Image (cartoon, rainbow, N blue to C red):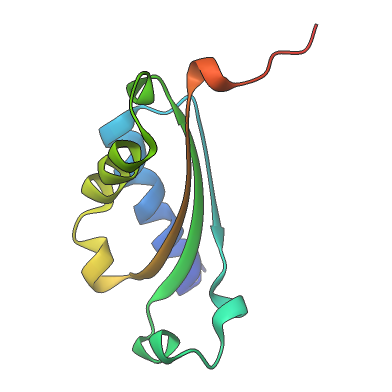
Length: 97
């Protein structure tokens, strides 16, 4: 049986993967860090996403964030109270030799 948090993370994952085809995507539920926060009373979650995608090539941070917000769309009204974003282009990954 999955939890509300796991269900929300699955929705976020699906939305971002569908829209941006990321090379890498991690999602962390940070809701526990905001217990007692006024926004936590809504029951919606606080999440941190790290997205690496070719779609971010040549884009500034603000545009990258907008693409992610566009991807999660209505989830910002129903499931996500706060979204902390790290968005990187594939070429920005450091490759060790």
